[in-house]
Amino acid sequence: MDKVILKTDFNKLKLFKRGKVRDIYDLGEFYLLISTDRISAYDVIMNQGIPGKGKILTKISEFWFDFTKDIIESHFVSTDVGSFPSECRKYAEDLEGRSMLVEKAELIPIECIVRGYITGSGWNDYQKTGQICGIELPKGLVESEKLQEPIFTPSTKAEIGAHDENISSDRAMEIVGEETFNAIKSATINIFKKASDYAFEKGIIIADTKFEFGFYNGKIILIDEVLTPDSSRFWSRESYEKGQAQFSYDKQYVRDYLTSINFNKKPPAPNLPEDVIKNTLLKYKEAQELLTESKP
Ligand SMILES: Nc1ncnc2c1ncn2[C@@H]1O[C@H](COP(=O)(O)OP(=O)(O)OP(=O)(O)O)[C@@H](O)[C@H]1O
Ligand SMILES: [Mg+2]
Picture 1 (cartoon, rainbow, N blue to C red):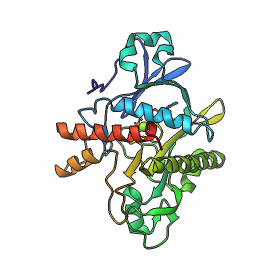
Picture 2: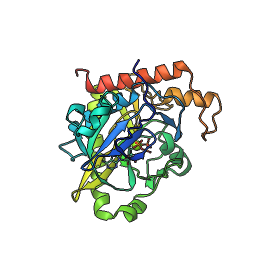
Picture 3: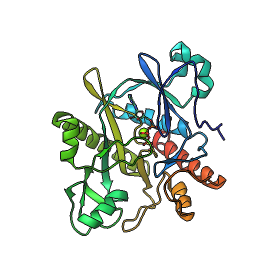
Picture 4: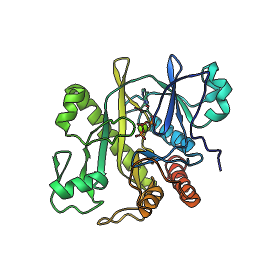
């Protein structure tokens, strides 16, 4: 197994911020985005990491940034540590495989969620109201059913420790402005459709996912991570069956364990058993191999 990296302390570099999973340094012209092995569930960061998860996420995102570049430009600059600015050299060993040099963007402050199937909070909302984020859906849908067309269901971007909140398109438009809203909505749907078709061929159903966008030089670009098991619900095409919850590639082992011990979804996090860590890593790895290495 890879060495686990929970947190970086590169004291010769200027730390910009730490997210739940990524540590970001400000290198002047670029940001250095480092995917650690931290894993969060229900927005709580677990004490242990998943060794090598950050490398898997970096590989998957890099793949999709290239795959989607005909739809929209992204923040991607490089993952070649040898070509990073010289002040990074010192940390090359830890950076290898899990870091990306990216353009500095001004965040567009909503999460662009797109759903191709009805599950999770969308399924909960639909059962109560027949809608998701104010979008009226056909009656009689069952859990995990495929929607006729993918739907755009934005949410707010919450600070660490808080939960994101689903919002209507009208509310999202108020926050980001109509023109930006239309641009990120259409990019979101287009990327989702193209990527879902591709993933399906590889045996993975992308049930839903989240994108983030930002402004760079006056243009809207795709930022953050793209279509990873952390930002998406991946299901196995083989075992998919509507009318029930699906086994998911993402944090299913972690969530199941937390449910089994009645975790109250608030810090402090409990310790994860070794087999939960191992199985989680295997699922992340499997998703990465299917998406980025397997032949059609
Ligand atoms: N090119 C970029 N320019 C500016 N900010 C970026 C860029 N790419 C990503 N970010 C921001 O960096 C952070 C990435 O860290 P991370 O994904 O760990 O954060 P998080 O959003 O707290 O967690 P999670 O995504 O797990 O909910 C996010 O806040 C994201 O918006
Ligand atoms: Mg994030």
